[in-house]
Every structure is written in C-alpha cells, then in structure tokens.
Amino acid sequence: MPAPRTTLRRGLAAAAALPLLAVALTACGYGSEAEEQDTTRVSADGKKLSADTVKIGYFPNLTHATALVGIEEGLIAEELGGTSVKPSTFNAGPSEIEALNAGSIDIGFIGPSPSINGYTKSKGQSLRIIGGSASGGVKLVVNPDKIKTVDDLKGKKIATPQLGNTQDVAFLNWISEKGWKVDAQSGKGDVSVVRSDNKVTPDAYRSGSLDGAWVPEPTASKLVSEGAKVLLDESTLWPDDRFVITNIIVSQKFLTAHPDVVEAVLRGTVNTNKWINAHPDEAKASANTALEKLSGKALPAEVLDPAWESIRITDDPLAATLDAQARHAVKAGLLAEPDLKGIYDLRPLNKILKAAGEPEAADAGLGVK
Image (tube, rainbow, N blue to C red):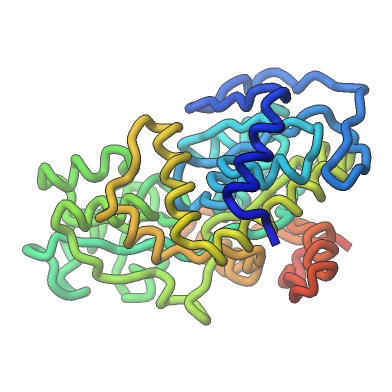
C-alpha cells in the first residue's frame, strides 16, 4: 500500500535535491526531440533505470486525478528513484498527442477519442495505451427554466468541449439513439450542438447563449453551481455504470527504449489509485491543491465535492468501452473505420497487478500480440 501523507511529505523533502519539477501550463516544445541521456538511475527498489528523465503530460482536470495526486504526493516519483519526473499540462487532447509525437512528453493521461485519433492517424505507430486512470465524470446539465425533460432539448443550444472530442462523440451518439438528426460537422439539427471550450462554457451559460452542456467534471458541477440541473449522468448509459474517460498512453519509441521506466511509472499510478480509493477525502484535497498550483485558484467545495463523487479511479482501461466509443465516432461520420488492433499493451500493467494479487485488465482483443 502507498505510504501515508506524512511519510510521503518526508519522501518529497528527501527528494528536494533532485531537479525541480517543471510544470508548463500550456503545451510547449513540440518541435524538438528530448535530449538523449546515457546515464542510468536507481529506482526505489535499487534497480537501475535506463532514462534520466520521464516527461509526463496531463490535463489540469479532476478526471486526471491519478496524475494530479500521483505527482503532488510523490507517489510516481517514489517508484522512479533517481529518474526525475518532468510534468507538463495541456488543455486539449490534440496538443498532447502532438507533444507525444514530437518527443516533448513520453507518457500522457488523455481521453479515448484523442487516443484513437492519434493511433489511427499514425497507422498504429505513435502510441500504446498502457493503463487506465478514470471512469465517469461526464454529465448533461441544463437550464431548468428551459429544459425540464429530455424532449425539451429539441431546438435548444447544448455545448460540448470540442468537435470530435470524447464528450462530443458521446452526445452525438445519444442524440442519434433518440432518433434526432444533427449534422456532426456543423452541429445544426434537431438540437444545436455548440462546440465551446470548457473554460468559457460557464460564462456562455450565464449569459444565456447556451441552454446546457454535455461536459466533464468539474465543468458540469461549475454549471450546477450557476443554477443548472443534471439531466443525465453519462455513466448510466454504460454497462456497470463504467466507461473510460482517461487512459494512460506512452510513445512507442519510449516504451521500446525504456520499458523499465514505463513499468516504474505504472507502479506509481497503481499505488496512486490505491491511495486515492483508500483515502478519498485526502486525495480530493490533494487534487485540489494541485489544481490551485496549476491554475492559481482552488475549486470551491460546492464544485469540488459533487465533481469528485462522480469520478471513479481505476487501473482498468475499460477497453471494451473505448472500442464502443470508436464505433460511435464512425457512426457520427467523425472517424473512418479504424483498425485498433495493437492500440493496447497491458503486459506491464498486468505484471504489476498480478504481483499485487489484483485481477488483470482485459484489452478487448485490441492488444499487441
């Protein structure tokens, strides 16, 4: 089990001599390859690691709680020993994929749609999904004065974060299953789908230019704090109320060159997830501390508490739900029929889970052979 917070704090202090963790608030350095290092480092268990630094990308978002807490509490660094962690944050999946392809990051926390797009656009050469991180945390929230039932959505303006992103695909698929028609590219139809950055959606809702939004946390709970009501929690649409919202991906180049470092990061994420699930209140506070450092502002309790409640932290990448989301994107006309075989390499994760006596994760037939 991961160490308690007091032990972790001592561990962080002991690591103060290591290079400072450089946190970039926006994607940077995409055009340059990371400098190769010949030195080896020593991990927490005394084994030498092959890379001097591992560059990890993630979003300043509660659905990336594994990264927020794992870095804030030192749980990932603890498994890496002398290999330093260089974190960077991103506001959109495409920019994170670009950074991965350019070598500006080695490992990333990211949603299913950009994972699928990155893999298919590179013809299966750019990345592998090596683990899970989070499920759920997506809601349809609406103006209760204008929308009281699902049928009231017709003719209304509902936001999603970005054309073709994970929530956009989910909303378009849900609309289609209702028998309503919407042009995926323009967003025009029985419901007006408005692509709006999560940072500006609350202001747009407040001004009356949006009637609701299909969005991840904490944006959904921010809107509720503005008077919106939850009309639908997306988790209720999935078997066992579980669907992937955040994966862990790795550059295939980095995985081939530094499998020991990848395994150490995964041990750190597995330990982080155990600690989060065993200490939810402390983990929630830790995630909020990390968000405050990244954005300059912590989430208020009326936003943080309901948002945290709706997210499930898991090592399982829930591969079957990623496959379903790919099919939804194809149906919406946003994705050509993809070949996703080989998108997963869960061998390092399952080695760790097996050693811990935990059930192994399945790859839905989409793993490397």
